[in-house]
Length: 205
Image (tube, rainbow, N blue to C red; front, side, top):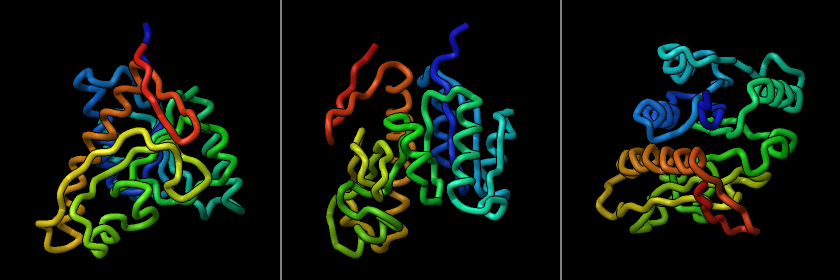
């Protein structure tokens, strides 16, 4: 029986974007299954979400490894053991080694809470608010070796000029993150994104 694409997720925190993928699968919007959740934090709430529906989990903690390269080599080993088609960074707060990125080139996606290429790196919502932009949003992109520089797959916009602080900006953007991540994973389960330089186009099966 075809179970669709096999998805591996990396998460460090509460896993709300991870939950959006779970919901998309449950509701039939995503043709696939999550075959592994990996976290670098033993107390990440994302692990609890996975346990509740019996998704296999692994904790790969930095302190257990001599260096980042050995840590990421273990992550590659786990993901390959599950034959994953897609790796989703769902609030994974570690810098990836080039080896991990190359192992899943154009098969690893990340979501950023700003409209790239503006405001890359940490706290995109704070950067956008402090810059005084009127419109912000979120971006799903393929992961490359730069900081939020990979080819852009999808973006969703929202006006933030009525927000009084960066917290309100983050609250406005978070539901868009869930929608946008779910849309991209759904599309990937039913077709493919073709990367041509910095341009990404979608081809439905």
